[in-house]
Image (tube, rainbow, N blue to C red):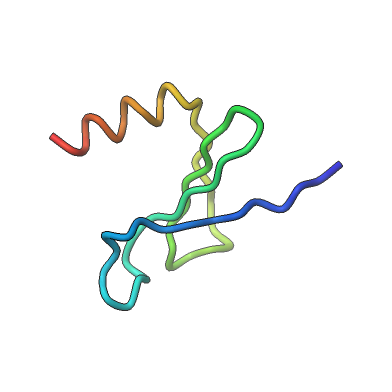
Length: 59
């Protein structure tokens, strides 16, 4: 069974909202993609890895 992902952007995105990353969650995975290239590659991370990445980036 295939489930369509629901992608969203941060409220901190720029005014036009096209210069950021989008994320979607599903089945124990955080999916990350470039908002400008929605049909491009997707980075799949475990939730713990996503938490580590966002913690590191926010420093």
